[in-house]
Every structure is written in structure tokens, then in C-alpha cells.
Figure 1 (cartoon, rainbow, N blue to C red):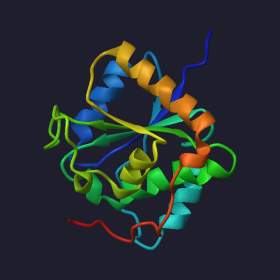
Figure 2 (figure 1 turned 180 degrees about the vertical axis):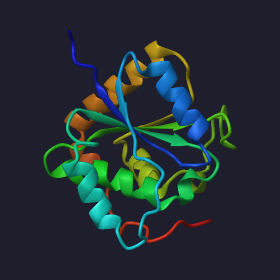
Figure 3 (figure 1 turned 120 degrees about the vertical axis):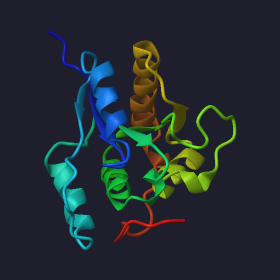
Length: 174
């Protein structure tokens, strides 16, 4: 029996739970899908949370981090921390990463993206060429291709991974 590729989903807990559940329903047969539970997090615990994600095996080599981007995902500290954890590994090899705009996102289906509507750490990596951005799909073939591309990019282009700035201390609104 082949081992399923691992995916860690990062999303706005509460706002985008429906889409995270839909993602698991659609793709659980192809991937081992993980996320964190929506729990209260001390705003000063960013670095500890990042370490726990890495040490707990949520993100690592061979993991593709899929950022489900809804209306307010850009403003969520937990999403910033999860992206930072995936990029923290760049000393050896960063996790693969891709952004997936949800149908509720204002830029869904548009050829133009507004950088302020995307988590800053993710946007930095879109600009550097480390990761890519797509619109929501329910196609297993498309997602398999995108995840494979993200993992190949992580293997070849770790030098393009950008993980600058302190982790967000609180949720923000732009």
C-alpha cells in the first residue's frame, strides 16, 4: 500500500471551516490531510506554536501546505504562524506550499490578485516564485498536479523561500 502524500491545511478557523471540511471530504482518499483545531492561542505564543507544528510533524519535508484563502485569511495570526512554520524548515528543505483562493474570496475567478487580500508571508513567496496561487478546485487531478508542483518547487527552490518578519502577535485588519 502506497503512502499518501501529506497536506497541512491552513485557513481562517470559524470563517472558512465549511471549505476546510469540504477539502477533506473531496481529497481524503488521495492525501493524508491535517490541520490544527480552532482553540484559543496566547498572542505571545507564536514562536512556541511554530515549534510545536514542526516538532509535532504537522509540517516538514514532504508536506504540502495548502493555504485556503477566504475573505479574512490575510488577517489571521494563526495562518501567518502556520506559513512561518512551513518556511522555517528552509535550512534543510521548506515544505511545499500553495495558495488556494476560495469561492468566497473577492478575487476568486479573476486574473488579477490584490496582494493585500492574501496573507503577507504567502504573498512574499508568491512574489519570489517559491509558491503559486490557484482558485478552488474540486478536481482531484488538478490538486494532485498542484501539490506535486509545490513539492518539486520546495525541493529545487528552497533558496526562494521568504520567511522574514516577526510572527503576527494578533489578528489584524487591513
